[in-house]
Image 1: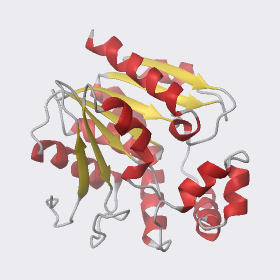
Image 2 (image 1 turned 120 degrees about the horizontal axis):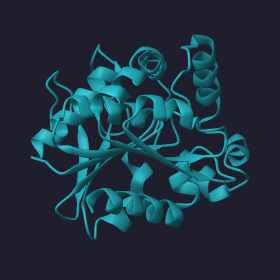
Image 3 (image 1 turned 90 degrees about the horizontal axis):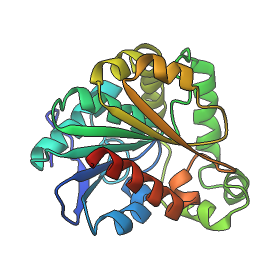
Image 4 (image 1 turned 60 degrees about the vertical axis):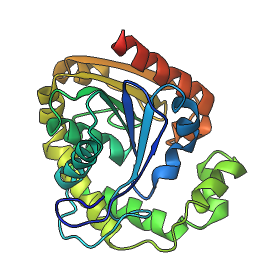
Length: 254
């Protein structure tokens, strides 16, 4: 499909069911992030995965790289597919996009499921930290030894990241990261408060998920913590992740 600002948006649709799960990848990643989830959930749900503009097989010829624009992309995709009974699932940066998209889809989203993001909602924008993240990732996205260590000495996960198909690491990814950082600083708390929907999270134990903050701003928030786990929780423990996500969805449906 083509977005309202003229960008080719790549997506895949699998399976069928009354509800649709829309999976949104994180920064530097594409729809293949969710391959394990497609195989598991397509038997009982419609499953839609997407390459966000600027990544994978989607276009990159745009000037507006804000999280608000990404939220519109996801909302436009759901409207293109005539989706009504939706669960939005976002990993990392994709979690913020899922929250933002919900504002454009009132009455159509059942819940947002956050994957390893927003352990704290009260975090100030830090451009130096984001710059360091960008340059470290850019310098090592094809470095198997670095990724082997990053993924806890799991060679299969390191290879999966290397093989995701990134042939370059464009400067616009830095712009996207900065825009997302600004959105997190100014918009995440108002968005969480506004959407008035169940929000669920599956986070790693890399740092504490601050329940006091979530309970202060969200109407209905619950989290599952995966111990001894890194950022890619759905890669490291796919079976456990799928069961946990399914339980969350079924609780809300019932």
